[in-house]
Length: 165
Image (cartoon, rainbow, N blue to C red; front, side):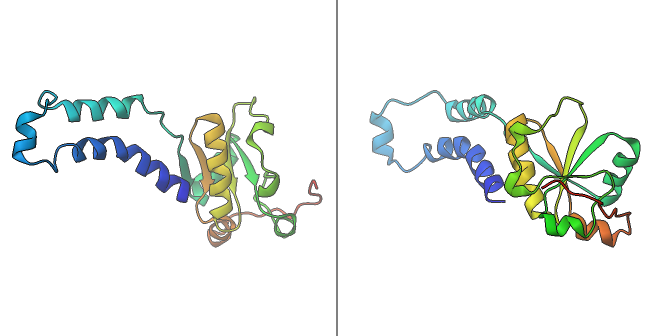
């Protein structure tokens, strides 16, 4: 959440700085100082926005939308909870990669399926999604409300026979 707020603030800075340059001087100062052509600040601010790199976004997906994607075979679901949490039950077809071992650079993304991440409540999966989005430069989805919302929606849960350590 802090990263997203920082990115929003960084995106807003060029226009704010340009507007700050418009005031604070007396009339006497303005008469003797060279000035940029009228509208320069706004033109510079709009150009700065276009030149700045756009951060990849994190998108929340509802339990029902995720289930539809799983049934269609169009998604790779990754559980970032601890081993102890995952043993209790996982979303069908989910892979288990705990957040403390989640490294986007080590993921094989070559099959072209979209990755959706989840955890218990959505907080850890949002962190993992931010990491993956930063690595790929593409939006990444995570389950809104995590496993809690999945269970509340009454969707299926698998009991894993084995989990990778």
